Image (cartoon, rainbow, N blue to C red; front, side, top):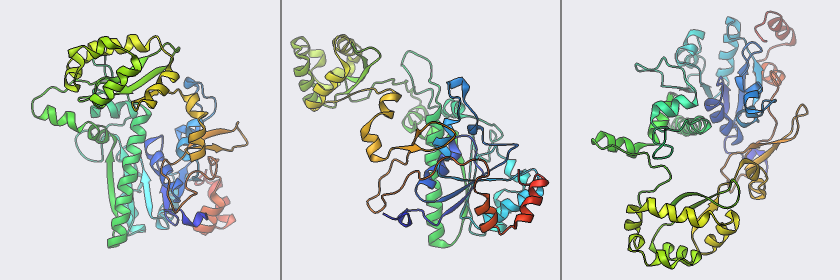
Length: 401
């Protein structure tokens, strides 16, 4: 199908976001057809352009996951003329998005009140650690802080262990919430003709994901860290198998599935044990039941056992590592993993948009990660109508750099 059918074709985003959460939001919109123009400078490039030697990545592979598809221009926002060019870019855009610490855009003269003078119906997103208002709004933060401060980290992990440090899942969760908020604001603009400002706090996103625990705490209860347990299902967990470093996830939803599991296990001892007769009794004795499951699975092959359980109608699958996911033909056929072609590095994959549209077959990534300033002929020349002489002068004075 033609690219003209992309759901968000014709939408333009002036993208001031940095790092992961904000760029991931605009990355999703770009895969749905929005033209996303990333604004950086040589003095302050996006941190994800740099190698991640700590993780063994000597090239900036992470940048693919949040910026493939985007256009890139250089603007040194410390220069007033660069700020004016940024406003002109916003004036021909539908959305402005930023993820700086609160106050930075205002100091630059690029806050919502200033930008709406350039574009009256602008939809603007600010994605920050704790939001633009409130006593904690001045805090900067990265993904582990969001999860810890928002309570999601406390509710994650083993029941007898410490809270879990939440990393990329927090950035991406905040990014997806930002996508929903932006689409809602754009829908309202289409209905009313009015733009608006969106203040999204990543910390609030973390708290929104543990609403049931917060309700319990507000009632004076002490919600426990559930680990891999489920309130209504047992056995329910991730178990070691005889296959080295292969774990099997199992979820038994009702008594009928429990009987089918027993048939696969061939375990008459558990069949006759009153402690495991019903879902309620299994949940009450889940610690002992987990010991039985661990013993049984510890002597079996992960993949073969998963297949037997699936054939019996029981939810089961091994926990795949990253290489298995990268090699998976199903994900590649669906376009969930998309090759990125960059002459400077080896061929690699990026994660595509997870949705599939019946009338739009070409959502996803259609170009590689942009080099810094790669698209200035189009943005500065065609959109902003700067002449070559004007651009050379701005580059000499480090307005464009």
